[in-house]
Length: 270
Ligand code: 5BU
Image (cartoon, rainbow, N blue to C red):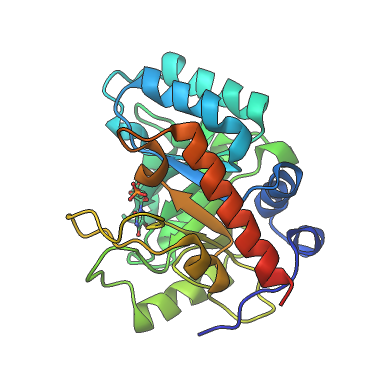
């Protein structure tokens, strides 16, 4: 396993070459949080309500915008962007692009969702090869304004959390190589642990994190916050552990944020 990064988010902010990564680190430092909440809900009212109440505790909200039943750009994206300014967080659309460059460019910039206009972060599978990164990079340039605050960044799916997934071994290694060749735009990975050489500062965002259960009956596998952060994860992605039915959402967000920050402090003190 690659050795974990033990330098602070402050140090990494100073040296990072991705504008998006610098913005992300500055939010994490200011709000003292490495928590990303995954908003897998189908009603816009619920989505926006969660964002407003949990906004103070997160650095990133992750969306699956295509599962919102009552979606319209004006009634979902516009208020979401306003809330991202109010609470100072980034928006990550978990789109998992997986097609040729020309097609993903259109999927990213057009259609119902116009993802590149509002999602600071999106992600893609490496399976199609370098064209997918080129297509998304071209889309980001075309759709997003140019200031540092409007920076866009891509995460490659180097690993997955689900049981029996195929993103392992040589596939994961080839994904890291693809990121290396595009490190101005690809600032990190969806992965379960640190990837890359010690001096390569890829940000690792990790799904499949839960403190109470080990699986969901549909293939999801949960690790604890301590397990993933000590293994090199920089941001923990939590969905149902926080927004699941019957949970006190704010109390759970505070619990996961505190676990994430303590695990980060423990890692940098080693
Ligand atoms: P959960 O409720 O914490 O299990 O939600 C996990 C979220 O992370 C959900 O939106 C998934 O689509 C997403 N996810 C994942 O669980 N595992 C992966 O490997 C990737 C994404 Br990539």
